[in-house]
Length: 445
Picture 1 (cartoon, rainbow, N blue to C red):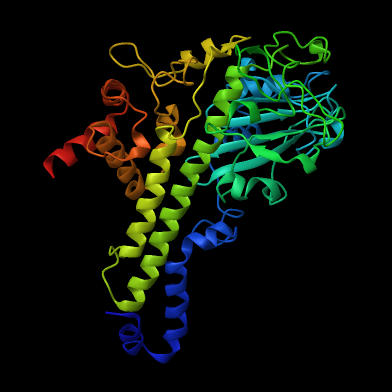
Picture 2 (tube, rainbow, N blue to C red; picture 1 turned 90 degrees about the horizontal axis):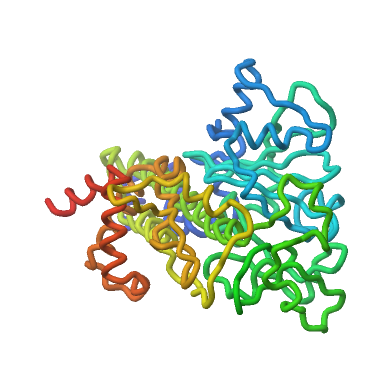
């Protein structure tokens, strides 16, 4: 039935609604890209209940099951990191004025950022609040603040839109999410926007990374933008002076921070993880929106409730493919020298990995030609991935299986050798039980 035939079968009062839904189905992805669909059902980002590590901790504090201790120098920071299982070794330091409490940030007084697989915590010296973001299994990234003004009964305040000015744009794949920016900062931390900015992810050229950040660790002959400032729009940035830095004491008072490091390995993980989280959130939102729209059309056209339109299927397939490409680290910029972290982060990160029968993990590092030994994201084991609607999660795993069994010969995946394909398959079979089910279904046709 074409659109005009469908209209003829409907009461006149339903024609307008039908056309509206048809436009939504045809251009649903554009709606999300414009940044308004996630504010309405079925996502209802601002009003829907969230369940994530921060909201869970907040509930425990309200009930008296948990408490946070206040420190005169760091406020609730130490206690929050412990309660949320965020390692201090993950500390990275950013001195560009590109976040909420920019009045507290400078090259001498950077903002510290800590993270694990689900939570990000930002701390500023003399800051009014701790800044937190958490990824849940349903709603993606949610942003919070926690007052640092005085000890008492701490209360997490959920952001209702201010953070989304930066955290729901093309840089975050058009959903509420995360980003790592690289800028040309002056000595006060102000970005010199006339020189441009970069979104830093796994595909970024090494020389364009971490402008406005401190970076500690070894990286051989490769050069980045960290540890340096520029005070005009014409003088070339001195990348050499900031290279292979292992001690920040000449640049900042390191004793003012929980760690003296801003570990380069943590920065590499952060840039991958931020966009991987965003891709998962896009798949979540797109699938729920596609099903929602399809159900409305089913009601109007008196089709079975479970019917999924072809346009909805294509929309979900596209979102699944995007996740697979992020999972398998397509377009990753190749490293040309050895990376060595400066803190204990490399060991801490590896220790959290699920290991197969041969002791291998998706959290194992290479750090010579690529970041990870096995180019398949560890976030396949995250609550955010497991919380994806089954419709899209199964599609992702099926696409993943076809790539790793060499049934998909797309040039997008030629960076994964047959040996790596086999090793990743073996790891997933041992550590992701759901993957075995998908393989059986593909084998049975």
